[in-house]
Amino acid sequence: MTSPRRVVVTGMGAVSAAGIGAPALWRAARDGRSCVAETRFARPYRGRIRISAQVQDFDPAAHLESSILPFCDPVTQFVLTAADEAVAQAGLSRGERMGPRTAVIIGTGVGGMHSLEDGLHLTLVEQGRPDPLTVPRLIPSSSPSHVSIRFGATGPCFAVASACASATQAIGMGAHFIRAGIVDRAIVGGTEDCITNSSALAWESLRVLTPDACRPFSKGRNGMVLGAGAGAFILEEAEFARARGAEALAEIAGYGTSSDAKDPVRPDADGAAACMRNALQDAVVNIEEIDYVNAHGTGTTVNDATESEALRLVFGDRLAHIPISSTKPVHGHGLGAGGALELIVTIGAIRESVAPPTINWREADAKCPIDAVPNEARPMPIRIALTNSFAFGGINASLVVRRAEAA
Picture 1 (cartoon, rainbow, N blue to C red):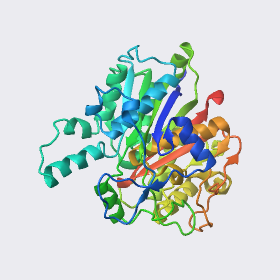
Picture 2 (picture 1 turned 90 degrees about the vertical axis):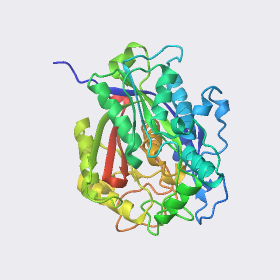
Picture 3 (picture 1 turned 135 degrees about the vertical axis):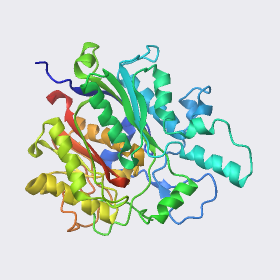
Picture 4 (picture 1 turned 135 degrees about the horizontal axis):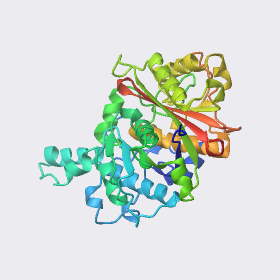
C-alpha cells in the first residue's frame, strides 16, 4: 500500500495593508501593528465609517507589465504580484511553463469590484460609453485565468466564490487535488478589494463595521474593519517538491468545510464546529495536538460569541488552554482573501514559534471564554495550528497546518 500524498507549501506571497510581501504581513501581525487607516475613496464618500485596512500606494506598473494592466482590476493586480513572490520563493522560474500538472484555484468573494463600480458610474452617472474590457476585468475568473496565463499552468483553473470562506476553500481544494493525484502542484490563494464607495455604504447598512477599532472577542466590541489584498501559495506534493530541492515552509495537513444550511447572515455554532472537526479528521489530528488557532474573529458581537461556542464544542475542557487569536484588527477582514492572508500569518506563527496577539482587546467577555492572546504576542512552541474562515450563507472552511520538520 502506498503512503498518502502529502502537501507542502513551498512559496507564498502577499499584498496587504501592511505592504508588499508575506514577510511584511507576518511582521505586522506578530508585532501587533495595526494597518488600519483613513480610507481613500475614488469619489466623495457620504458614509459614516471612514477607516479600513486598505492597500494604499500600490503602483501596479512597478510590479506588472504594461501589456496586461488594461485587463486587470486591482484584485488581479494584487494576486499576480503575490503569485510572483510565491513562485520566486518556491525556486521556480517564469521561463519554465508549469504545464498540465499544475492547477490554479483562486478565491474571491466578488471579483473586480472597482471595475464594476467604475463601469456603472461611467455609464449611469456620466452617461459615457463603457470600457470594452470592463467585463474581462470584473469577472471572478479573471484572477485565476491571469495567473494560469502568466505561469503556463494548463491544468484545472477556476475561481472559488464563497464569501469570506473563498480563499480557504481554494487552498483546501488545491491541496485535495494534489492528494488525489490530479496534479502535482497548485497555485492557490485569494484576492479581494471591496473598499469602494458603494460597497462600503452597503457594509455600513449591515451595521457590522466599527467606527473606531476592531476588538475581537473583547467585551465592548462593536464591529469589524474592512480589509483588502491578496495572498498566494505554491502547494506541491511533498516528494515532488523534495525531488527538485525545494524547501517546505509548512504542510497543509487537513482541510474541512461544511454548510450551516440555516441562515443567510447569522452564523451557527454547530456548522462551524462540524467544519473544524472535518479538518481535524482529514489531518488525522486530535484536539490535544492543536497548539494554536487563528480564529475567524471578525469583532462583531454575534460572530465572535458563535465562534467561541463552536470552539467549545470541538475542544471542550481544553478550550481555555489553547491560544486563539484574531489578526483582523491588523490587516482587516479581507473577505474573500481573508483566509489567504491568515494562512500566511498562521505559517509565520508556526515557523517562528510565536502566537500573534489579538490587539485592541480590552476586557474578557463571558460569551467568549477563550485565551485570546490579548494585545501582546506570545512566544511558544507551535507544531500544529488550525485556521478558520466562516462566511455569509453559512459556508465554513478550516485548515490544519503542520510544522514542516514534523511532517
